[in-house]
Image 1 (cartoon, rainbow, N blue to C red):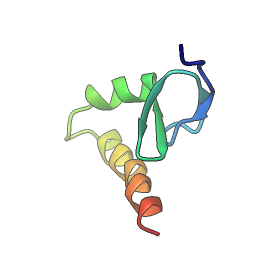
Image 2 (cartoon, helix red, strand yellow):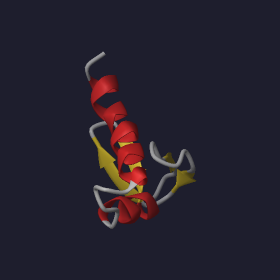
Image 3 (spheres, rainbow, N blue to C red):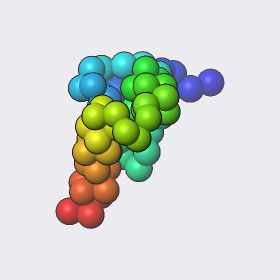
Image 4 (cartoon, rainbow, N blue to C red):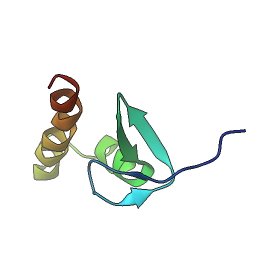
Length: 61
């Protein structure tokens, strides 16, 4: 059985126990749920896109 470890979310910057790992980055469950329910017309959507770009920038540096 896997033991839960705390990771820092790239969206909110908070250490959390549960969420998803994409490449080498972590997104907490709360931020993932908010992203999924955010309409593309909302200003917050662009914030999420900007934060998620970190995944690809850090991978390609």
